[in-house]
Amino acid sequence: MRAVPSEQRQEEARQIGERLRAARLAAEMTRAQLGNHVGCDETHIKFLETGKRGPSVYLINSLCLVLEIDPNYLLTGRTDRLRPGLRARLAAARIDGAYATRHPAAHSVAAAGSHVRKASLA
Image (cartoon, rainbow, N blue to C red):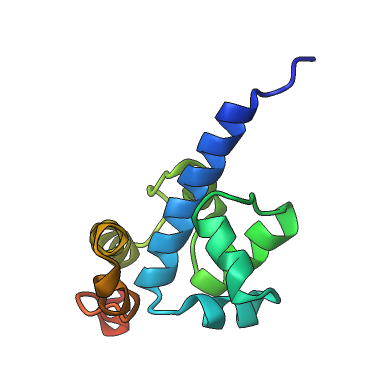
């Protein structure tokens, strides 16, 4: 059996991190809040979101339960099993999150979910 190249593992961790960040922003949670719910600290959530660490199977399960997302979304990006309202919130959070990454001063706006509200859940 061949090992997965480290570059491929790093890219997968980065993509999972981007989807995790979008889901957290869509849920209008801070890193600290999410960490408290799943039993880890804010720094660990940051490392997951930036792809510096990959989540364990147990952490994936906890993250998905807290963020109310399907594990397929987190691992592969597939949104077909998500509620339509959640799909829209994730799309908006990914756009806001990408802007906040390029413009650090906007992070608090994106983290607050200024364009997405929980009341819009379908």
